[in-house]
Image: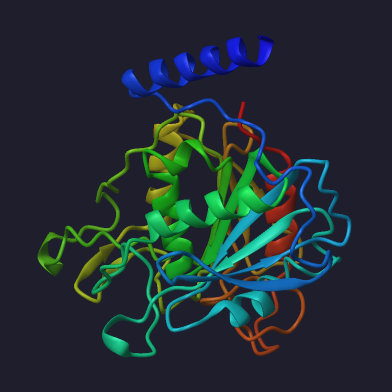
Length: 323
């Protein structure tokens, strides 16, 4: 009798929230209590019902009876899952011992090898749906903490992370976002004469006004310029303006608190609202990179950063969860 009453009450609540256009309440992940099909400490390649590929890493400490936080990670354009695993190092115990990490594979249009993400020029894939499908599948198989789901990515993958933060659905499902060297293309502006990076408004339909964002960008990035540009027939905003717009959406003071990054080349952390929105200017010498104090495929051992982006990202994620 109790079970029936509870089910009817739950159904009524879900029906009410749906009719009002509100997000449905979070429930315990369906995978809690199940024996994982992935060996803790290992990877498994998986495919959605529509044939999209992703790879899941399970921390060695995984306990199927304990809700575990999850990170989504998106590779850059023309890259793949394996490249992103090597780059972000979020499956290395130095940075992460207790978060599930899911790496998603972008599509290459027209049978080419040039992988892209939704929102980029000449890309028509539905990666918002892909992300939702992956989250549904993983939460059905593993004990995911639904209040602690996060997203990070590099370059075009970072730009897509920004798009996730602006999506009316996933912005209420993902707790915090950390794009690195993000390509925040605005395809709606397809004429160079109409592209004004310092003032262009970024389209956004975020479902809440407390979205945590930590972005990284280098002053020597000549692929996705820090001060914005017209590129690939789309407009790229000035990154500092992009961050200011996030601060405004989150109803924060328009002036950031700045702190220098020790041992960097003029690196600065710009913090709005005690860090709810944070822009890390990596330094004048850092290019289109995932900042690291060690050699990686981005820096070739020549442009070492004064900090590890992965460490800062993990600290940022640990400080935020959905209510």
